[in-house]
Length: 362
Image 1: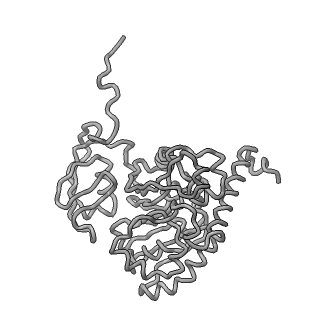
Image 2: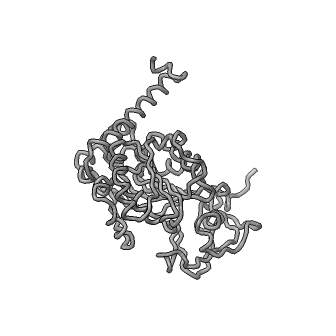
Image 3: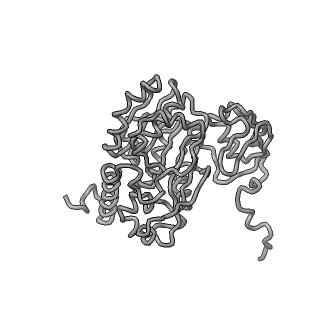
């Protein structure tokens, strides 16, 4: 069948689909057979350069060495308060984060890993019994599939408290489909907490077709402002940046190809809350952190702009109030105020009124 006759698809549509399929195949090969370990990567885009918290080091030490050797993440995707949660790891690879989170969610929780690379999943699956014996319980499962087509996998909508991803969304050729699928699987108040790579400008189309740059987590990276647009169009109205770091392209060949483009690794959290507004509105509300989350006795960090010290009353915008009140953090906070009053934009939460000093002309 010709390209332009597939399901009524136009020649341009068919060419785009063929290009996406070629990139996906190249990524599958790159992570399935080209790379044998993290040492084979040519940039630090897909490596975790952040220091591992002391509390997590013993948990990582319990993970099989082969699983750790095949790890290609770009950040540490371990938010607080995980015990008993049902968690989905997108692009789980050999399962490092799955087995780390399995220990944190405990016997009452579950962790599901999804990956499109059979070779990586084979490593993850062959060590399931090893980890069950070490942990004292078996609470992980793995599925082979594409993160752009989560609806084709045996995953119940609204069944996950948390979805994570570690330097994988940039490898997808359809980011919006990924985020839409994630939102479908999250329960109300659940969150997508993920690390990924972003660019300071849009990647030229020619670079997007470069399989090496794509496999190194560079040419599939979204321009950061386009990511915000995609996230909002998928139903995540207020993406929250948690942390970020610059990525240095030290390989001379890759640096020459990418030119002036600058890349960053960033961790975002997106809450599945319908009532979030597209701006930080001031309703005169406030929250107080009780200091009751294990490992976070002094303060709770929600994102790069919100650090809640224990016992301190802190004014917040309506969206932050909802995020805390409608998520798993609610029991650890005290809330004051409602939305019966409105005082405009929350200070520092957005642009000032554009016509504040404008003069009326007729």
